[in-house]
Length: 372
Image (cartoon, rainbow, N blue to C red; front, side, top):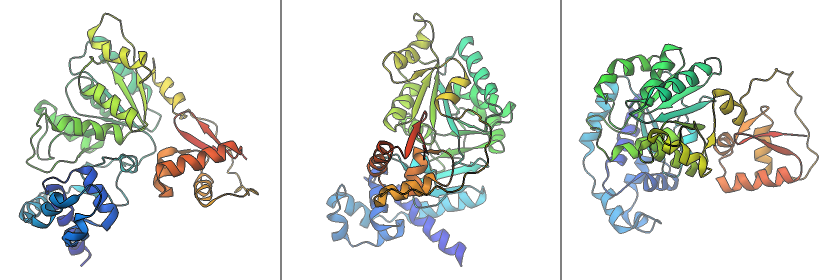
């Protein structure tokens, strides 16, 4: 019975992604309002008509949708290949991605890495790298062997592939975000690598089976790479291309962005130098720079502190934030968003007031802790 209910939920969740004129932002708004994909389909048209951002045209698209057979086909594919799915309302949906305004309503995943693990780093760069970029990428990954990080990239030629291969070689979990369905691998030369990654990380996509890697899919893929990660590292990039898009998206999502500098006359380093020059990325030369900036440097373990008693008057939002901060020594801003269920502005306001009172302090990498 439970499986039938779950399958029915999935049918409507997939169908939601098939409706013309309903993009990720609209889908998220609808889910927030109605609570589930099925409830959206069952909603009266007049209620859909008046929703902000939906209107009569999109409401009509929802009410006139009939192609549930395509959703049923996808469910069969998911069953056959034991693919995991994550909908916006699922507890295992990537919490970092959930905080992005344009997060995909549904994700398809094949792998064993925890998408909500504590440290996810995106490593991106040019497809046409030189020896300098290759060496930097390999050295960076090797320096992260004992840091319990997961490496995220786009499984493309060049720096992406080097990051994935070096991770697999050193038994570091690595996630490839795809611009197509899980029924294929692009580029095809990475098919063997992709299979290795399934048992040493995973493959993640928002695209259904039979979706080919069209050009317009790649910016969408890049937003997932940026959104699911704590930090984005750019290794060699021209002034145009996917790496710069990912870095810009990361800045827009309030992520930490880092870049390795290169020679000023090297076209393959123009993008990195541009990001650094314009304060869109912090300059780094090794993995240690990233760890320090993110507040991830290993410190000596101390005995657990007794729960602090705060004899200060706090408002409701501040109490929620404090309760979360009291559960562990340090908490990342994304975790505060996810656990508090408050808006990003409400969390920011609560943290500001708590910092002003000397109750909370901020650390590098958007990490917070109680100081009292």
